[in-house]
Length: 93
Image 1: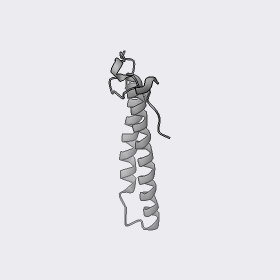
Image 2 (image 1 turned 60 degrees about the vertical axis):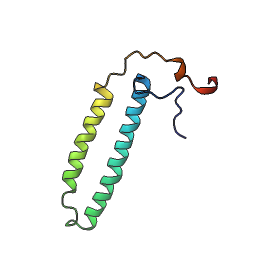
Image 3 (image 1 turned 90 degrees about the vertical axis):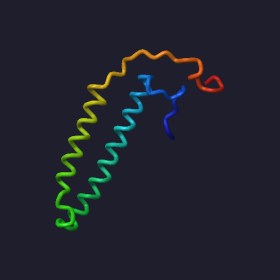
Image 4 (image 1 turned 135 degrees about the horizontal axis):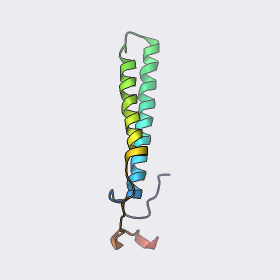
C-alpha cells in the first residue's frame, strides 16, 4: 500500500520533501540493483558481450553514493512551512 499523505502534497513542505527524496533514492537503489545484476549476469554468460560492465557499475555507484550523501547529509529539511486551510485533507481527516 502506498504511503498516505495527510494533506495536499507540496515540495515546499519539508516533511513531504524529505519523504519524496527518500522514495526517489529507494527507486534509484532498486534500479541500480536490477540493471547491474542483469548486466553482470550477461557478463558471466559471455564476457565479450558486455566488456564495459565494470565501468557502468562504478560510474553508477559513484552517482548513487553522491545521491545518498545529498539525501542523508546535505539536504536541509528544517524550513518552516505553514499549512494553509486549502491544504487540509477533504472530509476532515
